[in-house]
Length: 99
Image 1 (cartoon, rainbow, N blue to C red):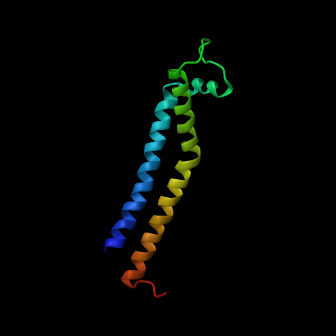
Image 2: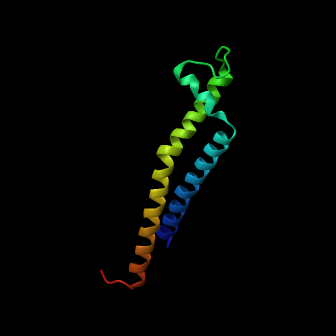
Image 3: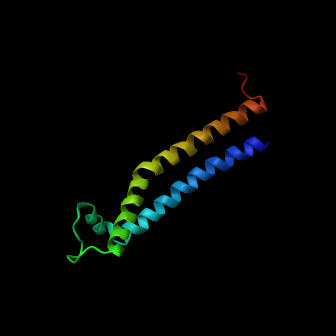
């Protein structure tokens, strides 16, 4: 029972984290912070010198975009496969499939 409960928690954990990362990225993208990624090439988005605020926004957007592209699909696939394993384990424990 305890192992089954932990499997459910982990599949939900990965799914929720994927949703949180997606929402965070979409908020930043909707706010128009993509323009601040120009700091990666060393140029300023507003034509004045680069300051800490501009660099922090650019790096935050870049990291959120990277996590949206790389980490979110991995989390979603992990949650999906954990759910499949949970379902298969439940069927085997109930004796519906004899393997």
